Length: 529
Ligand code: GDP
Image 1: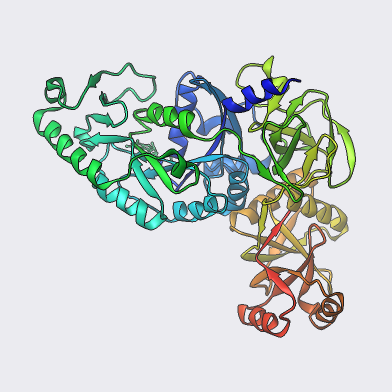
Image 2: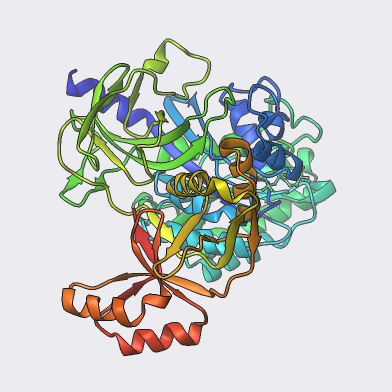
């Protein structure tokens, strides 16, 4: 395989995810993006996608009932000269760990903000996560067909609250019932909006130039005058787009529009394909791995129960970091030191089965996992390296889990360990008793686990309250000190699903006391896979 081909393919890729607060419009904009990517003939079908070809296991039913997306899926489509990968993330914050890990597999993010509301809680949290890797952010101010807040004030809020500079690329003309369209600052043209055409790719009327009298007659002279005045202000007071600052995550280009009206989404996609970075190099414990290297490598960021109920295996989602995946190739599963032949990986190239047999950096492939793959695993073409930065977060809620039928203890443990390997939940086994403690970041995770234990492992389990307030992974380089700590604190120690030593504290006070008492022991809130 010539490196030129790899360079070409990598250069075309754009891999991104959407971050937003619930209800800001992530699902709607995903639909419109897919409409523009010709993955959907008609927008309006994404929310129902769990129902058709997909599964009917109980937890899927649960997901459907609640209208939340528990699973991460991948959508690949061509746009402009690029091949775009959009990684979906769970909307509900109870599954935020999944979202955090998905954000480690993208090269840029689209931030969708409800322009009537401004910056909201979950957006703040997710922006903190993207900061860990200085991910470039593109902003879409949504719902311009409603009465929104003052656009200048919105930009100020983003700048102050999210600590990122804003460079408006388009500027709205009116809003709500009198929303007329946007002026594109870089193209020096006004694109006019028509309501009621959101399900289609519209033919739009474009007016060149800001002083064009056609603008006055199209939007009314009041709004045209207001636009000219606002733009003068905007040009004076806000930042110009700067590619370098964008790529380092310090500045975000801002687009205005309405996802529901499918207006402005194409401007955003044009910006994304033009400016968002092609697949970036990734840090491994050994060295930085470039996307255009000849040899294949990738890491697993997500494991998901198979969507096909006839197959009991699970799919491991792998981000390709370098080289080329081809069907039937051999890969080294670095953690277990085995070489495996991958013949049936799932790829996500839309509707193009022929092309689906290869993948390059930035692409996601799905590997069938029969229990040997864990989140964070690295695959290579033989090299010993391990990609870093795929985190586990200390859970914040705990329950003791107990069987209705005590004879099935082995299945329960197996199910819990497997579910913890795919990140659905965390499990802790205290050193001093036979309890099984389940830890979660959000309460819905508990429900999903009981549902899946029943449908996939045929065990019926129930929860009981348990006196655990928080957990920390513990490390100590000094074997003697660790030994003493283990003896003295054994009642508060447990092993997690991967046999890592964990301190489970009944109260924060207890945790703080132990941290003071054992200064040589590290109590970590996150653990790298
Ligand atoms: P998510 O929770 O972020 O996925 O948000 P959704 O895409 O499900 O949108 C939440 C609600 O806002 C739905 O009722 C959408 O129809 C509505 N919505 C999304 N975009 C727009 C928009 O541009 N204008 C208006 N008026 N409503 C919108």
